[in-house]
Length: 315
Image (cartoon, rainbow, N blue to C red):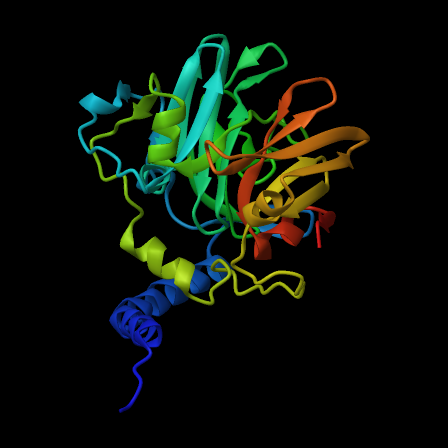
């Protein structure tokens, strides 16, 4: 009797079912690649173009987030859906990643903190940046532009363009300034709800699951839309890393690496930082020697050397 490898059959079935979507993806992103090369340049920053991919009006952003208890959510997130959770002195809030894929820029505030949640599905970034800079509170919006394959957003006060990956002002009156990061954690919605039963959730009346095109993109070999490929083989290009950053230096690792070690003591930017596994959220958290939490944000491996001069790993 012939033995049937059920796992292989399942994987083969998933691949076959994905073929039409992959073909559509190739066509769609082939068009984007053409536009990346030929579309207008807003500016050239550090030798790379800031490309206007489409009108800013084509991309949704949120001026003030609508947050509700989970029981009142119009499109209740599934327990297995990923959320970006933030816990501050003013409470706890969760932003479903699938919803952020549709609304890439979400301005919000909690207690004394004003911040913007930024999502770039092309490079896997989900970051929280402080909206307060040098005595003023900025309001951010989408631009329809990319720099080094990563979403670029803009403040309405000065029309300065900012990088989603680093919080650095790329072009405009505030060029060279850097937004400070706010710690958040990407985890399953069910785990976040158990840890923070009082949490509010972003509700914009649309699906909270990841768009199909983005799911297919994650399975593809594409590394953004510019056609650039990473030559750094320490990890697979689409490996989902967590980044602890200080200026142009980054420490990158997978959640699994921290889970295995439970605790990592390291130094970055001259500061001692301890990274520990938090079982309740099934995610790492980072704490500096001053007792304050430091941001860890996700990013695909291929995007790291495009944004940081030095990339260290735990390998």
